[in-house]
Length: 402
Ligand code: LLP
Image 1 (cartoon, rainbow, N blue to C red):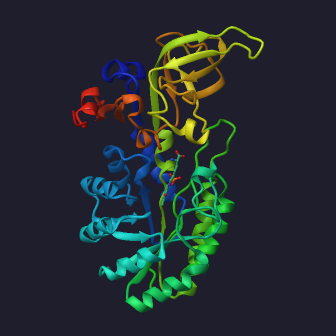
Image 2 (spheres, rainbow, N blue to C red; image 1 turned 45 degrees about the vertical axis):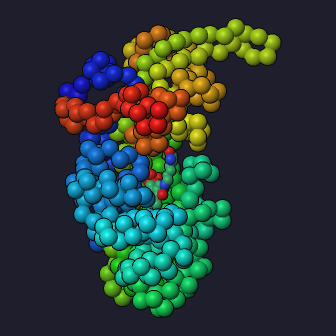
Image 3 (tube, rainbow, N blue to C red; image 1 turned 45 degrees about the horizontal axis):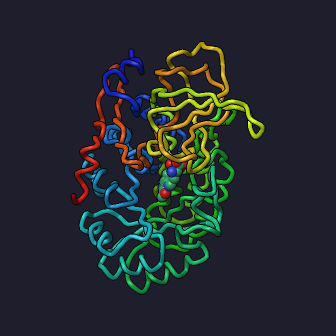
């Protein structure tokens, strides 16, 4: 039996992030299982949740790592991932970061022509290039990472310039990559972008892999349908098989999901610290505010992307429903987890669960308002392990010069 959330909070405190590794493993297998094309190498976009226990569970399922910073590369190496299983998808990296990646033996996935040139100049023999297929997608404009209005990637129409850099410098572009956005539930838009990327790939002579990126969404709302994984897998496999036949040699297919693997495995547990109902006024009907001991410092997705997270009242699931605003403890009006949400009427001290918080939850947490980061625990069957201890105010303060 996995431990009860109330027991976890009694032991580790509130607020608390909890990740269930059984869910992580199930998602990792589901994704790998939908691709029939071989060779296939999935990568985990470690930015979604860098908790080492989560990373190790995914790597044990045969995944490599997509990293986007020196810190993420260091974290993956420390989790025991070999350098040749890490792809560093750079974005405006410095020359010093490039030098470090080369010394570590990590392949750099360039997002600009000038970076590819500098890599060649620094003596790199191989690189990957991220292209912008001009097809973007995503659950919110801030997480759409391709199309006309993005800083990411080399525009697909510039592929001949990439090939020219190869010829001029001798660097081999062995990977052709795209990542069009995040939170995608429609396999069709993915397929359109894949077709563009394969046209790009046909113009590059030294490829060893094609990486279609991450971006697979999850149904945060009850009425949303999950991505049709078998349709996505079948399309990717079919396109790759046809492409490999025309390219003349086998090429590895890669995908690099983040959210899909970890979002549904994570819950943010929080305790109700205040319940207040404002009176009706001429300007507005009175609202009931349910205040919690966490805020957008720990889960910024609602404030930043107008995201939706299901909320359960774990203490009194059968109480009569009330329409409430669930809000945090940060001094900003935007610190709202849900507006006019129908919940079993929360009372002081109740434990609430913010669901599907395993991706881009603690990964994006901050110490705003000088509030420490929360603790994180991992459930593995009936075992519970502390994954990250709760930060203390002293730890926050000691970084300053006094
Ligand atoms: N590969 C690259 C190069 C990426 O930039 C990303 C995410 C991924 C893979 C993984 O995407 P995923 O499968 O998780 O959608 N903070 C936002 C999501 C930003 C995603 C940025 N890049 C959120 O909370 O919704």
